[in-house]
Amino acid sequence: MGLLERAETHYHQALEALKALPIRWDRERFAFWLRQDYPFVEALYRYQVALLAEAPQAHRFPLVQALLATVEELDWLLAQGADPGAPVHPVRREYIALLEEMAGLAYPYRLALFYFLNRLFLEAWNAHVEGDGPWQELSEHWAAPEFQAVLFDLEVLAQGMAEGLGPGVLAHYLERILEMEKKTWSLLL
Image (cartoon, rainbow, N blue to C red):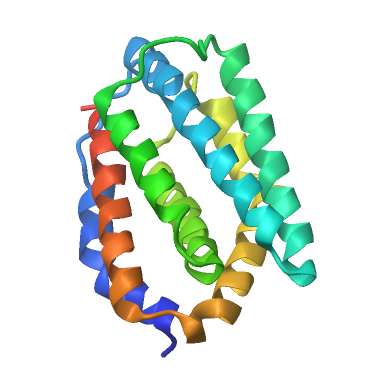
């Protein structure tokens, strides 16, 4: 079992707790959550640009595809009424600070953590989002074969970098990412 698989096994319980949160979906709460997603996705965009700038040639195409998906998400959030100048919720500021901290890590860690950020969010999304509603368009975006291919490519890249990763550093940041995902999803409680 490789390092990434061990990490997934170790954090399975925390992920299941995240997926079991009793989310209450309504249009107003979801609209607030989306508006607060904009500053985080903007910070994720900056994280990805720095990652791409340091990427070896073989990693560039999948990272460009991931960056394109992020740019499309930013455009979509703006179309949903997100205001880049609006106050940022403390939970989102905390998650942005974590991204900025992780940006100081070596490239292999940043790549693996970027993969996990996407993977953990999508697992929570798939557990919580169902049926028709204002989230339908975003659900279709995440479920599209093109985005699923990007996630698969990120997983392959992360697996290729896993051998050089120290399990303590990876475990520390995965725990913090899961904590921030739980706080973020808790905005919908």
